[in-house]
Length: 140
Image (tube, rainbow, N blue to C red; front, side):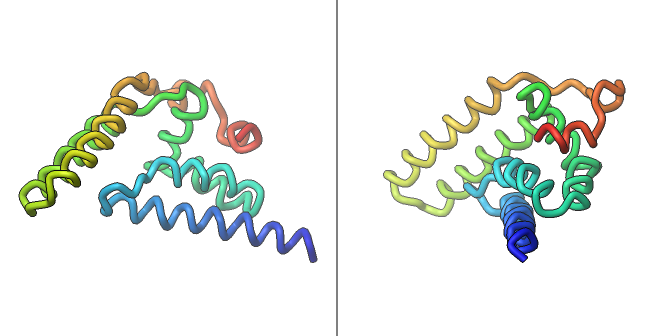
């Protein structure tokens, strides 16, 4: 009974993180990647099937592999993230946000953009056969 409750908790955490990460695709200031990493960490403890789905997903899997193996972010992802940060800031500016909000938001966005840009570009490990999904699930 205790084991099944524990697995349920891990599964709920994984699904919740996936949900929040998905919402982060459209909601400014709600990060997608940290929630995806939490889901990848919790899923094997609650649902090996969900973990396999995450690691083998055509859109999510490559980013997980790149981060786990290289602490890298795909170049296209970095470009899109920085563009969305700029767009979000412009929406605030055009919406007439107060100067303090604009300044704080600009500082936060600059820090996030700096972090993203300074990460190495991901190399395609999966196509080269250098890693296996099941190995990643066990190591994560």
